Image 1: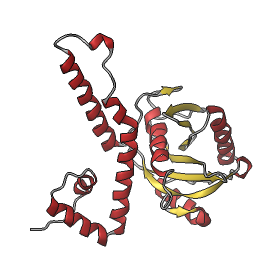
Image 2: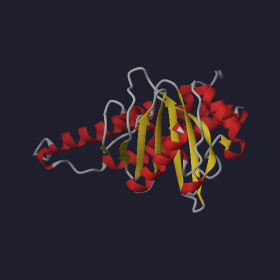
Image 3: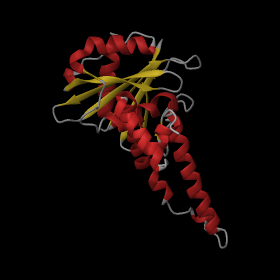
Image 4: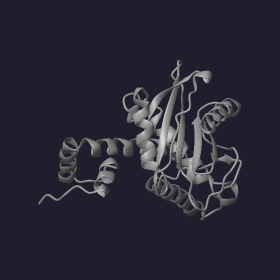
Length: 251
């Protein structure tokens, strides 16, 4: 007997964990519900980004101090199990950091910088659906995202740096929605701006820098919002753009 498709089944569908009967039921549901189909595409994109970031951990050699007789197999299994568990936890929560070099307060880093890095990794490679609303409809985009995150937003003008607004979308934060803007230059290189309401336990901060793999992030907190600028470029190049964005926002 058929029963409604749940959110858990959508995740299971992406992970290939459904039997043939439920897989077919989910596919029929997705064909009739384009918004759910879009979420499934997002889930799949997140999975690809997470696997790209963490699969290599499963094949890392054991530290020399752990490679001891009779215990080596146990340690190898434990290391791989821990990596697999970490991947599952990160996939469920959206908190992605891994092996990272960071400057700044560790308590504030995951809530803004890591999510900005994940969103950048997931959406910038997209050709057909990088944004929900295109930059040509900027006024509607800004009004919609401002309403959803509960604070007024601006879209910085980055023509001085050679970038134009591609558009934006709504993305998840820890406990509320966040706004996400994408910019692109003539060479097709993209940078992104992630913004969300500041949480009660967060303080106003100056610029801080973090990176995950080849994605750098400059982030800060102002009176009401937290911002993170992400890009695949040198720290100095990204800092210039981040400063330009901050000046536009605060100007």
